[in-house]
Length: 35
Image 1 (tube, rainbow, N blue to C red):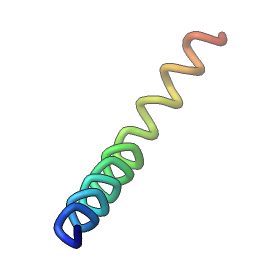
Image 2: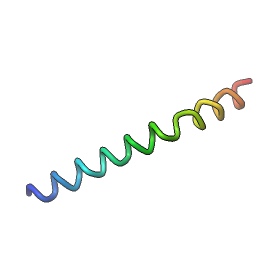
Image 3: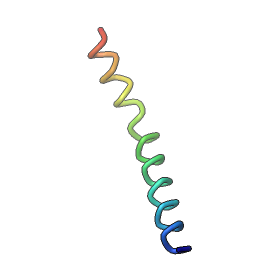
């Protein structure tokens, strides 16, 4: 049970980190798509 929670927490942190890292690229893509 505790291991599952730790894995989930780790996965969430990793996803959030990757999302923040890709933020500029996502913004430029959205701007290119909208413009």
